[in-house]
View 1 (cartoon, one colour):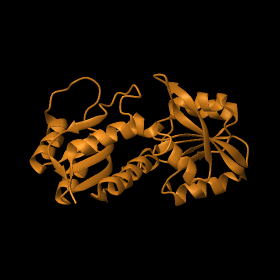
View 2 (view 1 turned 180 degrees about the horizontal axis):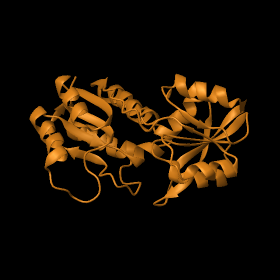
View 3 (view 1 turned 60 degrees about the horizontal axis):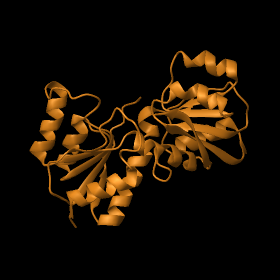
Length: 252
């Protein structure tokens, strides 16, 4: 079954509220290279490799978290030119949702990761551009830190670094997927037992240790697979299009 690209784009714009969050990413339709969409590729990154894999799999659209266009306009040469050129040659449109997909209450990376751990999202933390990027969530019962790490692994985040500086067991989680370490102080102020994000920073080590908070760094890529996959499932249900998960982990 095929659906018009413009109808899918209008649906995604409304579903994800692309203009809700101030963002360096140009969220929404970044490349318009097809009119109809029968198959959507789902990926974390709009890299040349994922674009080529989507084209090879006969996708007419690629839905990603990390898109092609960021910040100010840049020359389309070198890597950016090669990626966008591959989209047009392959008839592949690209739709990106960065921070709007992180913060979405139902389909966002933070909320979905919290629920995968058995925690219930309650509120936000880490204000940026008038929006709270992170999710504060509570486990129904206190859980040993090792068990929480095991649940992360089962959810697909099995390459972890842990700083066990806080209480054990834990119950109150601060979740901010991807590169969220700059909001560690806000997680501490919110009273979290454990801060879960994608990657660490050297400067955060002593802050976490002195504040007595546990931190689990579960991979930038791995923690940001949840949202795009959930949105892909929603597109399949709503429009009857086929979808394909294009898995290209970066190891970071």
